[in-house]
Image (tube, rainbow, N blue to C red; front, side):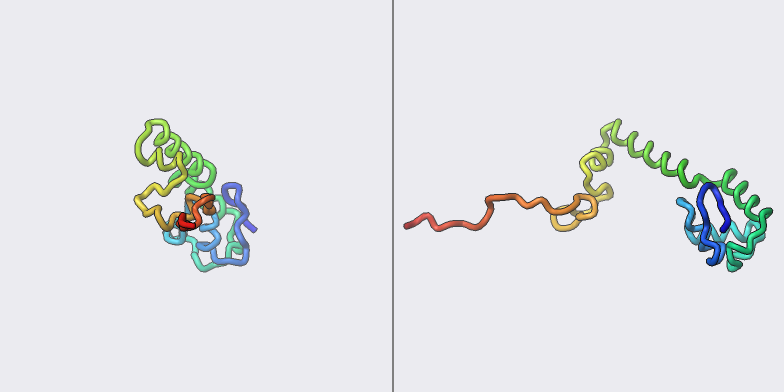
Length: 128
């Protein structure tokens, strides 16, 4: 089980699938990286030599922002939007969708579980 950038990669999976376990690396980036480093993407991650793991580590350090640094940068970007008070920052602050999605019927992922408003049953007949 190779360890890259503080993450244990699954040993029994192909290298390009294992590399996508790192935050910030998807399948296309993993495949491109394997070909540029001369590693067979279909080979199991457990078959990687120490030299190949070191090659992958140095490539990631030089060329990509991944894991903790990427998470930190995203949080800093969101904090900057909040601080300057732009529309996107206000949407982040209120926990609403940021990219223009509708909120009247959907947006449950951002808004959370429905909060039922009490006292709104039906129109009662006031005549006796």
